[in-house]
Amino acid sequence: MTSTPIPESSPLPVAIIGAGPAGLMAAERLSAAGVPVHVFDAMPSAGRKFLLAGKGGLNLTHSEPFAAFAARYGRRQPQVEPLLRAFDAEAVRAWAGGLGVETFVGTSGRVFPKEMKAAPLLRAWMQRLRHPASGVPVQFHMRHRWLGFARPPQPGEALALCFQTANGERSVPAGRVLLALGGASWPRLGSDGRWVKLLQERDIALAPLLPANCGFDVAPTTARQAEQGTAPADAAPGGWSRHFRERFAGQPFKAVAIDCDDGQGGRFHRRGEFVATETGIEGSVVYAASHLLRDAILRSSQPAELRIDLLPDHSLEQVLAAVRHPRGSKSLSGHLKSRLGLQGIKAALLYELLDKAAMHDPERLAQAIKALPLPLAAARPVEEAISSAGGVCFEALDAQLRVRALPQLACAGEMLDWEAPTGGYLLTACLASGVVAAQGLLEREAA
Image 1 (cartoon, rainbow, N blue to C red):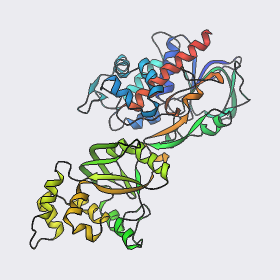
Image 2 (image 1 turned 90 degrees about the horizontal axis):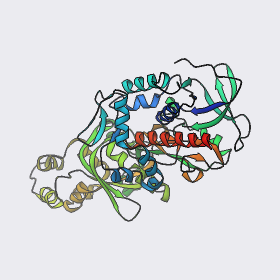
Image 3 (image 1 turned 90 degrees about the vertical axis):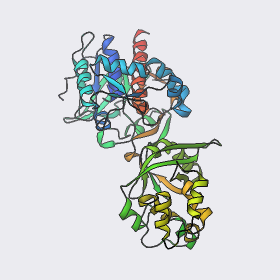
């Protein structure tokens, strides 16, 4: 993607830094209103993370009712819900339809493009931004890494933006600026969190960037190891024994349910699947509980307990009856396989986490099969997470996402202090924040 020359004579009307979904949506709204927009990004092309997220099937949004949808944003629902009212799930589908992309609702309620891929939608979107039927074409400046402000910003004045380019550093003045720089996950695609220090220097309130929708490392010793008071030489850095790691890393736990404390006196319970990794676990059902597990670890500085129901279609009574059934000459492993279908990675996890006494005590073994405690020591690094939590605090922004102390500067997208589960909620809120921020900048122009 080639860059457009930047006018030198006067400040740009609007500069958007970040060519992800939030920045592009804001650019579209401003362009349609007749405002010249210049989009800057450090990457060679727009929408890098958007493209990768849609590689296996682009989940645009979710079809559930609005109240349930808005509740997915947890403690930040009061701040995110007004954004969604400006651009909700139905608006996302209508917008995609306007780009010639037909959508459908999957069996889980998630909404996908008919072709499933992100690339056709992004191509159509970029074409409309560059060559709109009405409005002003959006100008793109790629390989421009934002370095901060060339001089201290003052309310009401044009902001002097400093960029690193292939030809060295350059300063670009802009009357209004939108930052849509993403969080800190997948940094090789541009969301590297470098902006944190730049905003801290300007006393803009930030919450620490944390991994969201992430995997976890298991605690460094199994229950059997803890009982013995030793950590065997074959213990892996993340806690799995060498035997378990070498035989089962990469394999899925299918047809299970998980349970954990929700931090408010209740419980989180969900059926699904997850995968054993070299050091712990990851996967869709783990991602759904990741914010609870992460926060529990941060609160106590101790491992969080995840309870796994290995046989959610069996009652405890059924499991106990099967375990108690005489096994004759069969081994315990053979007995569990024949009576309950427990084998492979599920059976291996029991042997990994339970001591010998528990394995041969029918009551304790049955309880473990229905609620096997797995201690989780730490979330995986934010660079590996699907998304990140934390960022610019809503309290530092007005209702149009403009910085209160510097109203010519706004923020949008994943760099805001919110998080959401996978399922289209992340993308919808990013798009919605771009819509609201664009409106705020338009109102700023009219003021």
